[in-house]
Image 1: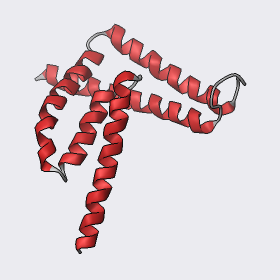
Image 2: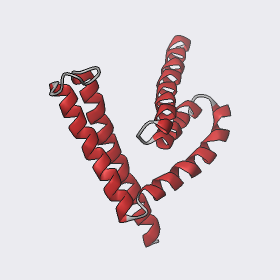
Image 3: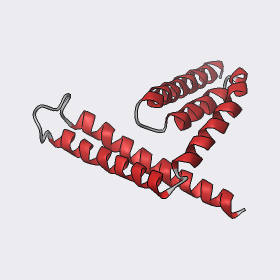
Length: 136
């Protein structure tokens, strides 16, 4: 049983670390960086309690960023346009429409499409959360 517990602990550490690192990368790249940093911290804190001290400050900033992202129709429209651009770019990369694109193919295209889908999912989640808060 100890070996199973160790495998679980390592699996959680790897999964949380990957989500955290992707979130950190998305802090400077287009994407929901703070929300993924928060998700990574929550995953890691479930197995490593010392990390819980970082969860609340990151949660506060992530929720503020989520609120800001849907604070005006202009911001929502900008986010939707970015999501549509990611989806279109993914298709263009995947189909190798332009030979001059770096790293052509579906490996790059699918990651761009996935980024667009994640953006739309998080935009919808943010909008729902802000709407719920305003109706209280």
